Length: 476
Image: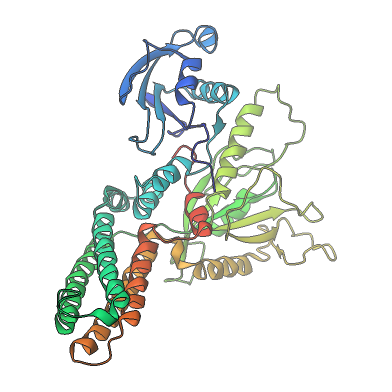
């Protein structure tokens, strides 16, 4: 698990034109880092405050001048991430943003991993898991409906309802556990109520909680109406000039990406919805859909050196491609025949992601023994493309459903509803004078608590946490 006290830095806005850019700092030592980067107006206040500062003349200011920066600073646990945090608002200049991040790392910070700021907020209890995943949904939204749906989740209405529901279940479980502990002493003098009153009270509470659960289910269904969930990301990755963009165009069914013989033609990632009735899958209307992402080549380009003008641009494009691989559910790893099969050191595939190995440019035949489990393809002859489409569609259809916030939310609510029905049936037997099965009742209540906890993040494994937050953007 990532250390929530590490001093981290990352841009929080995407490169591009604009008025302001934001760089985010977090962790132990933020104030010392601010003092090392900027000329501050005086002692830093103990309360959260907006501060105007300028670049230090003996550091970045020597090159960039006395550029003004607005600092939104939270000094302690009251902040959005539960620890020291600062957001730097500066002119929207990508070279300036990069210089500031590099200088912060030189002074002791490290570059934040994808989703690390959101993870810290989750671990500190500032966000529940529904809201944490909504951050990713906001970033990935491709329509007004999807954005509205994601912002609604981020506001936390459903999460608050489920937290209150879970608290009610915990209180009821405590009462049942007390009845088990004092089973031999149950009487009006010991527990203050008769057995019938006890079971009647349990049933009344269960029904009250059940009504709250049904209201949460109705709210989820109404908010999901008309809003399409985030599609699985299928990312094409591989060395430069290996035919990735040609493969992307073939799968999309049109010339969506620029293709040329020169290395480094792709300078940014491209994405297109594939599946259903898209041209990439002719004759397969209603099939599963996914988001196909084309990325720049990963690895050193031939003849490229750090002093060449294009080197920085190529490195930035490769870094963007690596980030896309880190958010993928499915990775299409492309290589030439006879090329090294090992992954580059800088590429990290998310836990649980499906990797499909592809041999590109096989129109001249396949070398003996080179294919193995790889799919041989040629965009010139069409070799292997139908097989690849079927392989991707099968992988998308088999993805774990908990990868989607909406699907896990529904599954958790359905599980809690079933456990409450079982608990009420047990309580009804007790109320009718049947065997008192408080242990079974407690077990059903714990099942309901765990089901709700899987949605809100109270009961969740570290593997699933890693999977969820590794798909967030760096700086979020």
